[in-house]
Amino acid sequence: MAPNPKLFFFHNPKAGGVSIRSLMRSISDLLRAPVFENNMVDHRRNAADYSAFKGYDVYEGHYGREIYDQVADNHLTLTNFRDPITRIVSLYNFFRFSVQLSDEELASEVYFAVNFAKTQSFEAFVRSEDEKINVYIQDHHARQLSHSGWGLSQPADLLKACETLRTMTWFHILEESELSLRWGEQVFGLPVPELPHENRSISTTEPLIRESDMSPSTRHIILDKNKNDLRLFEHAVSELHKRVRL
View 1 (cartoon, rainbow, N blue to C red):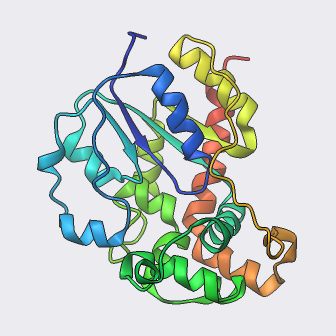
View 2 (view 1 turned 90 degrees about the vertical axis):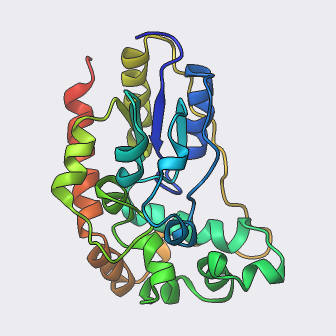
């Protein structure tokens, strides 16, 4: 692979993506795009027109397929996976304990889900039908790889998400990190160090929520909301094992 490749990272939230972005900087130091879509408010403002953001060499953000289709120019593609249940537990812990915002910021639409997590239980967070929460916890990755993780009006297209995955240059699966990094060395032709643990949730006031803490009914709701993400995750694990030269 040529040095300093152009890269497009479909960053799946709370799945080890911050660590991967650090890794990307060791792979390519070309011109990086500014962050231009990081939530559903940004998505609504951009109105599916990303022409102003063409021409960059590296895109790394919570960007979806609709952005890639407009700005990509022979970019290598990357994404990151995590079991959907543990990803949502981690997301809640991150919002509740790690995100520090002013009262004014927490009252804004952008941070509605963060404020909800800080004031409500994990069960209430998962059971909510508010779109400002569901956009994070309902088939987010499958929607991201088929159109956008920040819109719920268009449901996830699992076939299109799997097609995006099929053409992916490299992806990392948190539960299969060692194998993912071994494959990364094969793809990029250079040693890929063990990913650092970055952006982890820490609480000094109360215990973090654990997957083992949730009730069967809460687990069932997560599974029901993430049927496509679960199938996409399983497909990614299968693809990883096919692609790695052992």
